[in-house]
Image (cartoon, rainbow, N blue to C red; front, side):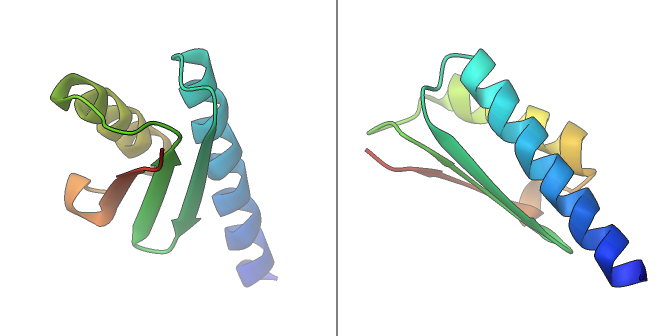
Length: 76
């Protein structure tokens, strides 16, 4: 039961991150959250330092994870 609650929490975090990214102008984005890690994929050839910082800050807020545990991948 605890595992199911944890998976639900991760799914909710993924959806929240994806919605926020779309709201911030990234037309397509996917988030994958697991215990201790988060991977954010955005549909863009390259990301500026400012974009990376904004995505990182938002992902940290949503997941409670440290920056070193969050990977941001541009996929153009």
